[in-house]
Each structure stands twice: as C-alpha cells, then as structure tokens.
Image: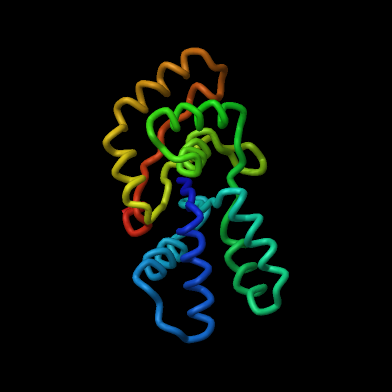
Length: 174
C-alpha cells in the first residue's frame, strides 16, 4: 500500500524526529505521525512526500544541525511524481472547491507514481487538515463520478487510477 504525506504531516514527522534526538516531549500530532512512520515496512506500506516538501527538506539537509535527521527521514520516504493526467485532475478537483495546494496533493495521490513508474496512485493521503478530510468525504460521490467519466477517455494504465482515502495519520492502515 502507498501513503502520501501532505506537507504538514511530513513536517510533523521531521519535527518529531528532531525532538526525539534532543530528548524533548512530542506533540500529539508528532506522536501520531511517528507512529505511522514507524509502521512503514516496504513493500507493505510505502510512504511518499510531495515534491515541494522534498525540495525544502533537501535544502534544510545542508544545515549541519538538521542533516542527520532529515537524511533519516528522506531515506524512509519516496517522492511522489506527477504523471500525465495530474494537471488535468488537479484542475477538476479545484472545480470541486479544493484549494490549489489541496487539489495538487489529491491529484498526486490519484495520478502520481514512484521514480521508476512502477505504481499509479496512492491508497491513502495522510493529513491533519480536517477541513480537507471533511470536504473530500462530502464530495466523494461526485469526485468518483468525475474520475469515472474521465477514465473513459484516457489510455491505459491511467484508466485504472483510483481515489485515495484521505485520513489522519493515526487512521492510515488501521
């Protein structure tokens, strides 16, 4: 199974790892995210991050005080890469009332792949963004109908794309 971490969830994981390294107390969000992080065992559950998060983390990894922890995190996750229908799907999701950033995350979870292009889509999006979770849940039927209509007009393997579950980290794989 594949899980895409939104930027806040990825940030909570890195912050949690930094706090652990310093012996500091973790927030509840950091605990939930690190629990998910600890449950990853490829090929059972693979964690992915969005490209902008990877770019920020790779820049921060140049700083000596963050380097070891960020490299630990980056070695446990993969970068989700957009496929051919990512932009079209993101535009359609924006038409369902999602912000540009949320639509991009959700589109990447539907039309994203790994660096070897061996997968299509994510089973889960892990986020603490409750409004996004709620909006996804209330619009699910209409979004699925839109995806199904789009699939009639696109080639393989894209017509096998599926919608992810959008959940808080503590509910992923539970």
